[in-house]
Structure formats: C-alpha cells, structure tokens
Length: 142
Image (cartoon, rainbow, N blue to C red; front, side, top):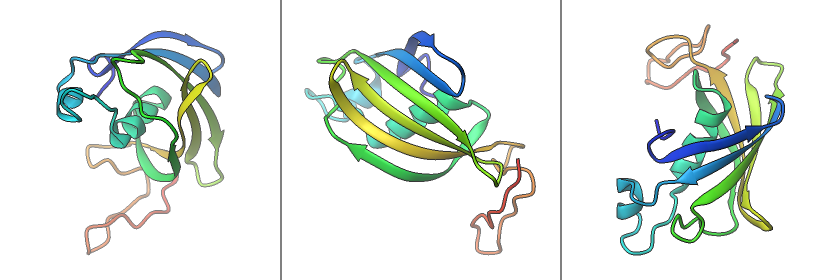
C-alpha cells in the first residue's frame, strides 16, 4: 500500500463515479530515493498502484488498457498533484477506471485500468480459477 506512506490524500471531491483527488507526494520516501537518486521520478508501477488504491482498496488490477506518460512526475517540483478517476462498470463485473494525473495545466499521465473485486487471500475474484500453468483463467464475476 502506498496510500498514507508514499502519498497522502489532501482532498477528495465529486461523486464516487467521477472523483478528483488532491494528493501530496512524499519526496523523502525510499522509492523516490532509489528512482532516481538526486532526480526523483514517480515510477509507472506506482502510478498504477496509486490509481488502484484510490479507486477501490478491495480490488486488484486485472489489466492496464492504456498508460501514457506525458511528463515526468518529480515530487520535488510537483509535491502536490491532482488525480481524476472516472469509473465505468463493465458487463463482466469489472470496473474500468480512467485516470488523468495533472497539476494545473500540466498533464503528467493518462491511464485506463481494469479492476476486479478481491474476494479472498489468493487475490482471485469470485469464480476465477488458476490454470495448471499458474495463470488466471479469467472470466471472473464480481
């Protein structure tokens, strides 16, 4: 979990299906010290995890349909950023979350992440099974 450690939520506004968050990034976090020393940059994996945590804590990322990096997020230059999340339920029970990460007129990243409900300690959604090769068979129904 990155929330309350890597970033904190300063403000949230709007309905659950179209919410804007104002976040504060903790530039002193070990991830920023390692990526990259002296010139911290938010890793793409942290952007995906941040979207997941803001969208629904009891879910897992089923897929990332799109992730564009338009500008580097440096917590020393932009310690506060905004994240707009738009939720769209899908026919298969998953939720597509479109995200725009920005500060003022600068758009840092755009992404579309598909989330599924986490049901148990395996991280599988209800009805989802693991194939013999160790990969998810998909077809989960939330």
